[in-house]
Length: 145
Length: 116
Image 1 (tube, rainbow over the protein chains, first blue to last red):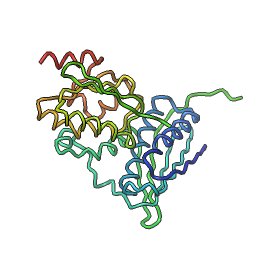
Image 2: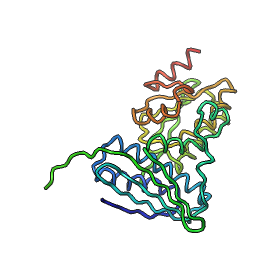
Image 3: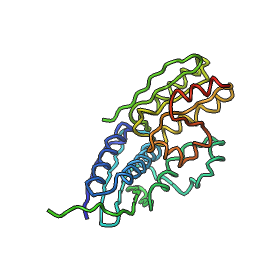
């Protein structure tokens, strides 16, 4: 299992750094280009939600992004130390109705769940929050040596 | 560091916003400002061209939702053009093709305004 880690402050300008980190980690792990694009967007959405909701857009919070790859899955863990984010309160959108109500904020959640095979939340109040994003993959074959 | 910028030009009564780079939660305010400026000037016929856009997240998509109703109430519209497949797929996932007219080229989008 290969793992990589990135630690950044909760500034939206760091989103591009996060995307570059995830792109490199996934590509180096042999994930196909199309899946890499989906993974990048899902992680961007997750981190944007953390910056906005866990840290209320304060730039002083911290995010820790870890990636792990196995032969069958690519997993991204994102840990923060801000307010607990309760994803269950965001329903799967009826997009037409959703747009009529102008509640655009949940689009990111919808994208994450659509683009990834599994999205899990772990929260230890007062300690940390973690979101785990998982994508089932078939490794691009590489020749040994 | 990924960058994002916009440029605006007028073609008759139509305003064209060309997007370039990465549109996310950090850069979305740039596009928001463009819409605010155009609306202030009563420019309600708007084409947004995506030919040079590399990336969009939901924050970028949200900008369109924030302004479309006001623009349409003023008998205007936002028409979209020039998307690559990657960007179009995200729009499609979120049902945007049902809400906006999407054209292959800026020229076609501008033409559609003049047909009305």
